[in-house]
Length: 254
Image (cartoon, rainbow, N blue to C red; front, side, top):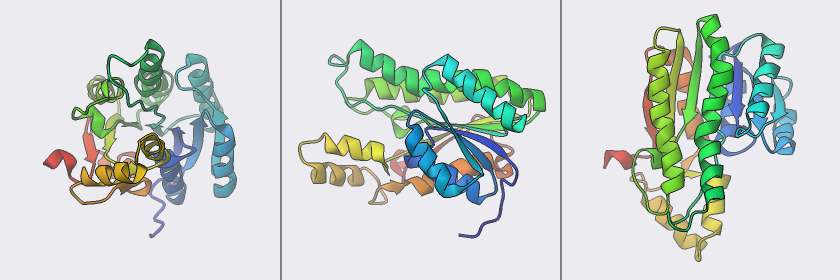
């Protein structure tokens, strides 16, 4: 793949950037010339990725559920760059549980990570973008935020809420120069998906079932989702505001 440096000099925050879609996004951004701050609970894994990619990447420990942690990330980014050009709200927490078996603690964990976390990052980062008159926020939702699935009330509620949050914030910021858009991955081969299939009675059968949900006949890759995220980070998406892009191999087209 050609390295066109389409994000040359851009200052980017990627939450949950140590693995999966987040790590693929960090790699793509660095290839395109960006500098990236990874905000992740797993600092050791984030540091390993930073060591691999070089000085363009720095890391900070962050639990996106905690406002103090989010405030610290925003402060670190402003101290380093004086601005933030791109914010990718990627950190997420999954749950596969019947609605009446879900505990309050599980519900709070998923909603706080997948919905409150992006709101907190927008609260503390976006005002700097507004002050600069430019910026791009990319929220990573899910196919579960667009259509219903069984055993997905907590996760689907959080991801569906993130879709509407994206639209609401996009309208609120429409004349500010800050773009807010959303990517909804389908079935993607990531550590999160691996954890889900590990919990199934027959892992191979579960993987086959997942592949069968994708009209293209295979799971997507983290790199393919990162390409969609890159589009919203780049100037090619200048007219996109409140867009919700399904990256799902045709699932919602059925």
